[in-house]
Length: 101
Image 1 (spheres, helix red, strand yellow):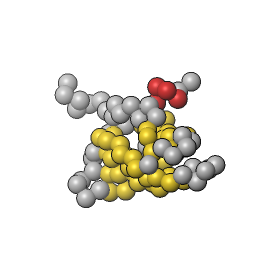
Image 2: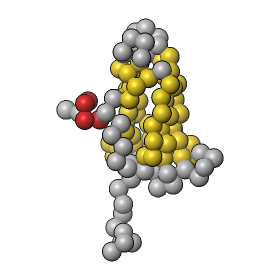
Image 3: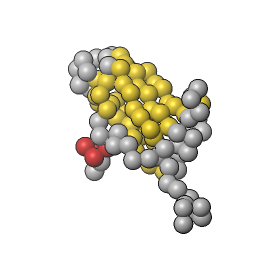
Image 4: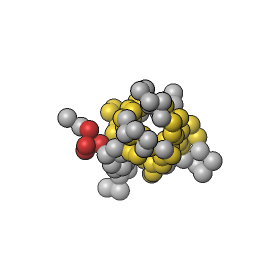
C-alpha cells in the first residue's frame, strides 16, 4: 500500500538508460559526425554527482575511438536515482531496445 513496505526499483523508465544491477547503469550513444557507437558503464557510487536542483547527474565527454568525434552526454536523476532525462551534444542516444540481445 502506497509503496511503504516494498523497495522501489530505481533507474526509472527511461528508454535510453539501462540499469544492469542496483546502482550500475549503461548507456549507448552514436556520434553525429561519423555514426560511431560509444558505450558507457557508470556507477552510482563512483560516477554520479549531486546536481544543484536536488537530484543527481552523470556528465561525460564523448570521444569516439576511430574518428575522434567529440561530444558530451548528460543523464539526470531525481533524489531516488530514477532517470529523469538525457541530454546530448554532438551525440544521439540509442534506445535500449535497439541494442539489447
